[in-house]
Image (tube, rainbow over all chains, first blue to last red; front, side):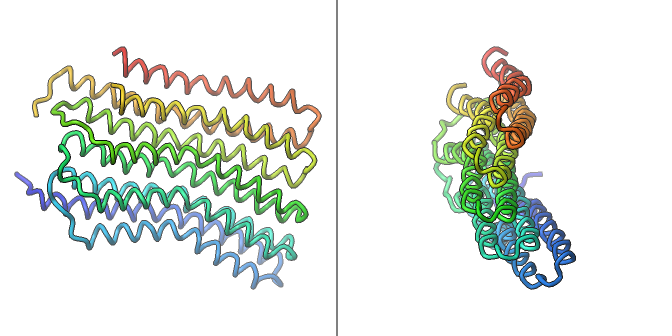
Length: 324
Length: 82
C-alpha cells in the first residue's frame, strides 16, 4: 500500500498534535494540583487569610498554566494550518514540533507549581510579607517557563520553516532530532527551577529581613539549573540551520538522531541535580545569612560537579554531529 | 536506498552511543545534586566544618560520577572503536 505524501503529512500533523497536548497537559495539571493542595492546607490553618491565599493560588496556577497553553497553541496550529508537503522532511518536522512542545511543557508545568505552593504556605506563616511573596513567586515561576519558551520557539521554527531545498536524508533526522533535543532537555531544568523557586519563597517567609538575599540566590540557582536546557537549544539550532550533505547511508542519519537523544535525555539529570543543590543553598541563606558566601560557594562547586555529565552528553552529541 | 550490513552496524553504534550517554547522565546528575544539597545543609548547621564537609562532598560526588564516566567511555568506544 503506497501512502501519498499529502496523506502522510496530514497524519503527522494529527499525530503530532495529539502527542503535543497529551504530554503537555501532564505537567501543568500536576503543578497546579500541588499548588491547590498547599493552598487548601494553608487556608485550613488560617481561615482569616483565605482571600489572600486564594488570590495567590490563582495567580500561581495561571503562570503554571502558561506552558500548557503553549502546547494548546502548537496543537491547534498543527490541526488547522495548511502544511506544505514537499518531502518526507515535512512529516518529520511536524512530528518534531509536536514532541518538542509536548515534552517541553512537562517540567515547567510541574516546576511552576512549587513556588506558588510555597507562597501560599508562606502567606499563612507571614501575612505581613504578602506582596514580597507574590513578587518572588511571580519572578520564580516566570523563570521556570524559560525552557518551555525555548520549546515553543523551536516548535514554531519547525512548523514554519521551508525545508524544500534540503536533501531528504539526513534532513528528516535533523529536524526530528531538533524537536526532541530541546523538548527533552527542557524537562529537568523546568522542574529544577521550580524546586529552587520553592526554596526562595519559603526563605522569604521564614526570614523577611533576608528576602532580598533569598531572591538573589534563587535567581542565581535557577540560572545555573537551566544551563543544560540551553545545551539542548544549541544542538537544536545546529540541527535545523546547518545544511547537512545528502547521503544514502543510514549511519550519518542515525548519528544526528542519536545526538539529539543524547543531549536531550542527558540534560534531565543534571538539571534536577543542580537545582537540588541550589534549593538547599537558597533555603539556608535566609536561615544563616552570616555564612551566605560559604553556602553559595559550596552550591556552585557541587552544582559544577553535578553538571559534568550534562557536559559529557553535549560533547558526545557534538562529536556525533561534527566528527563521525 | 539499499542498506548494507556495515552501514547498519554503524548506525546502531551511533544510536547506542547517544542512548548510553544520554540515559547514563541522568543518575550521576541527580545523585551528585543530592550530595551537594546535603553538603549545603550540613554547612548551614555547622559552618565551622565547611572545609571537611566540602571535601567529603567532592569525594562522594567523584564516586557517584563513575557511572557517568562509564557511559562516556562506552559512548566513545561505540563512536570510534567499534
